[in-house]
Length: 500
Image (cartoon, rainbow, N blue to C red; front, side):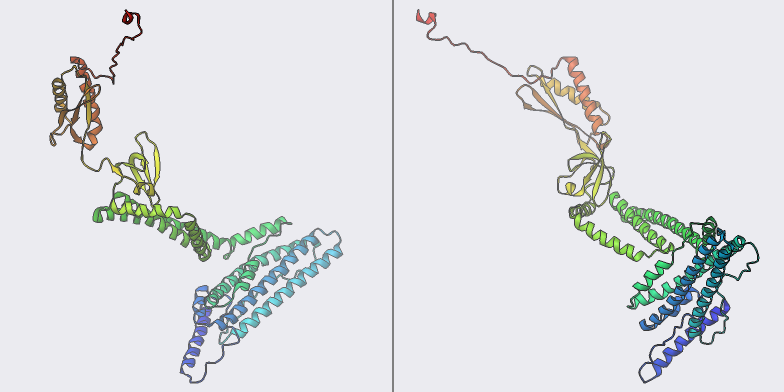
């Protein structure tokens, strides 16, 4: 680790010295180096590599990308050769002809040695070209050890297969590490205008973990190797853990900030409850969305295409739902003008009920028969809004009809007594009881007491019941609609009586 840190410092020092000479010199800038600089140590920490590629130009980054690409390509080729060797070893296990089996075993060993040698030469060539003063010894690339064939052919083939599978697991871990470092270089190159599509396609194509499904041992070895690998199962276990932790933190933070904003708006700014809840919910959902996007990065998912897709989808949806924009505008106007609030009994948009909640598109009502109705905000704002419970007091309008043969003075007196005796009727404003109309079938008496808004319904029903009871007790009738029909008889001029 210390030697890697020293090599990284040396490379960064070379970059800094080169930049200083380029600034001090009066001649034209020297051409970019023809050899890579960041591949001195193929295991350089990713954080250090990010710093190293930051000052490089597009041309220099293209050289670095080619070098890391060659390392990745060599590792992928070595893995492919070993996979073929595993298949040959599986065939040799089941081969009954000893001579043929030994030939296959020999080919497998030779191919593995050749692949290891080629990979070592490629890595050595690239690292030596990039090496400046670093004297760190090269790490040997694992390969299949030469195995003596002095036992049974099947046993030897099984031993070779096991060794090759172990080597493949280790090489896959190294390939993943190289892939990550190539991705860092490609990200920097893409930011500076380079074309990285071909590199990325190759990287994706060779990064998958393949299993040899024709052999149980191969499948098991591949699964166990991936699960125990630092660049495989351990890495993704940590990524999933980070994903869950980030989501949990985002949920807690969103809930806390939503509650705090709701409290702040209620205690300090004093907006309507509809506005308070809407603003708090918007903040909560935005934070949850941001937290989810951050959590996706923990799973090594590039959220840039996701965000671009969401933006494009939002544009298409916005164009398709233009009518909903009017509901949003109406919702904002309702929040600004505050014609009603949560808990108010409102008649709006053809619905009468208690306001439960509201968003930018619709308002939720609970009717008196316990129905939940969602009314578009546009229907509410563009029509008459009646807030039944906006004021603390409300007048109760009652009308009683008596017959023409009954005394309206007695009727008025009975109604006044009932009103004055009711404990929920307010004295101020004073109640009004007066005969105001002579209708076709009745004499109409108006009764207008005042009560608290919450007591309005009880006052109305109580007075109506008691007046009816007292009218019945003294014989005052409440007439039905009636019509008097008068029949007149006219004698005809041709009747016998008129002839006489």
